[in-house]
Image 1: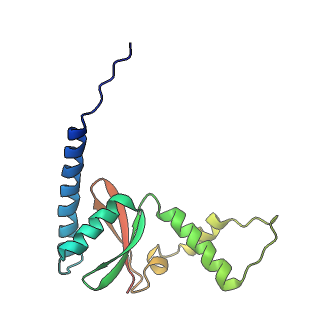
Image 2: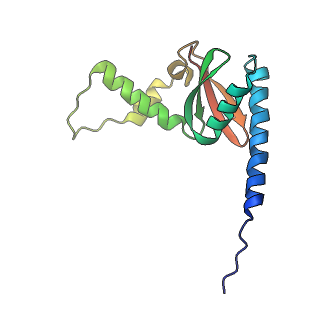
Image 3: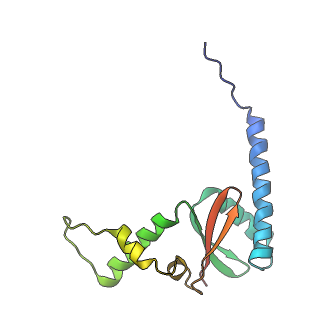
Length: 141
């Protein structure tokens, strides 16, 4: 007979609440210390929720908009956006049999990092860890 210990739902819920408390504290410190902005609890809660559920999102904090992208997803998103920008700007209409190496194109564009692409405000790129996940964030306005 197979006997496997099944986690208690109360233990799972308690662990989730502890994780969220840690994330919420980190978010409050991030806004106040790292960004040097005024903390609005509602904005901090929204940011904490987004960090738990999304890998790429925009968040307004104290009247300033930022884009957050999870470290594990940023290269894929960068390649997709470089392809989109290139096709739109240069009106590229290639036959279906022609293959363009978008990874190599993105590498060629990645001269000064991600900031020039993702940060429309000042071209800066910044990294921060929330819990065990690394994030890039960019000011967009």
